[in-house]
Amino acid sequence: MIILAAPLQGYTEGIWRLAHAGVFEPYSGTPDAYCAPFLRVEKGDVRARDIRDLSLSATGPVATVPQIIFRDIEEFRLLADTLGQNGYGRIDLNLGCPFPPQCHRGRGAAMVARTDILEAVAEEIHNRPGIRFSIKMRLGLSSPHEWENSVPIINRMPLTHVTVHPRTATQQYKGTLHTAEFARMLQAISHPVIYNGDIAEPADIDRIMETYPGLAGVMIGRGLLARPSLIAEWRSGKEWDTAMQTEALAAMHGMIYRHYESVLCGEAQMLSKLIPFWEYPSAIIGRRKAREIAKSRNLSVYISRVREAVSG
Image 1 (tube, rainbow, N blue to C red):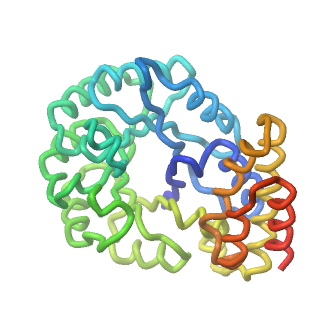
Image 2 (image 1 turned 180 degrees about the horizontal axis):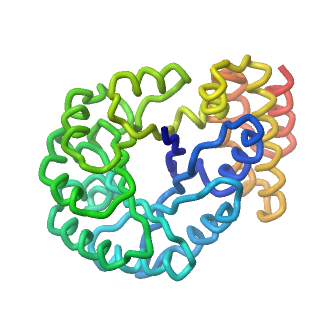
């Protein structure tokens, strides 16, 4: 069974991927691959900072799969060409981003209904045999039935797998999962299917695999940010107590802190990168302590509050 780490803009950046792998590899707690936050075209070119961040974990202990988001075939070609020229042999296509600024421009989840672009993408993929492609998608933009017209095209693409989050873009990350519609989609897709959505604890993986026995695996996003030991716990069959989880968080944070200390200048820059790390694992360190960390306005206060949070 495949376990993948989902891409989350502003959270699962290169140093987070390296830190997670560095801490959890000894516990068999790393995913089979990390899917990096999407690369996009800005001002007519691929953002250089996205390439730099991607390269940070390219030679790490766990594979990193770049993801691209595009609004037309020209953007697709530019992004795919750039990744190919930089030596990447795997690319994930983002058909699932729910954020309005992207969807309003026809990117992300809006692409599910844009069958004309998908037809062109299918042809492009066939012309790039040296790259393995996959797709991460939602059921649709506003209707959970929008996938129906795109799946026949997707089935004709040579893909390693399709990851599906069974919500629409308008739902963002809340609201009821369309489980019945996902079951229909699972039967309709000819590629291996990976499930993504609301995996918060080890038992959720078992429940999902039992509910959908045809699945190839799962992709974990926010659940892995909130509980970085989740994969290690599931594989070992033993849940970690708060002390073990806190110790692992502290080790990850130490690696991330040292990295940003070496590449950034100024406390404001440092804090903007460090504070988001504590947003999701608040259940481990306590919500009050997480709120106090978030209010830090200088590094000395931040460090003091982090030490208090991880010392118990």
